[in-house]
Image (cartoon, rainbow, N blue to C red):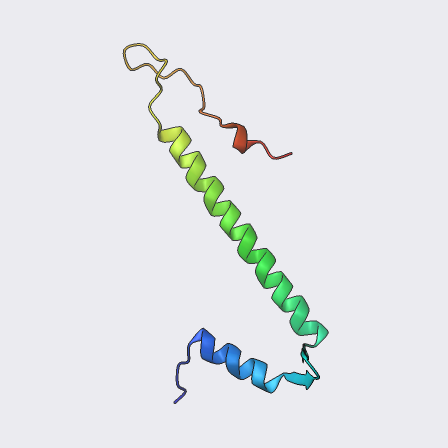
Length: 87
């Protein structure tokens, strides 16, 4: 049966097993494949976060009640903030 460890414990063990001391510097030895996997992990995580934020924003915009409509009519205008436009 394997024991669950915290992220901190895992990282400490990883650093202990994969580092070399050199004077005042520490060199971390990571194979190219692991570096690529880590980069893809961060890219996928960031893309997922952006997708969630966009989905949440679109949901808020479509469910917001219009202030310019008369007698509860929907005017079809979306609430767009300047931050919505990415240069």
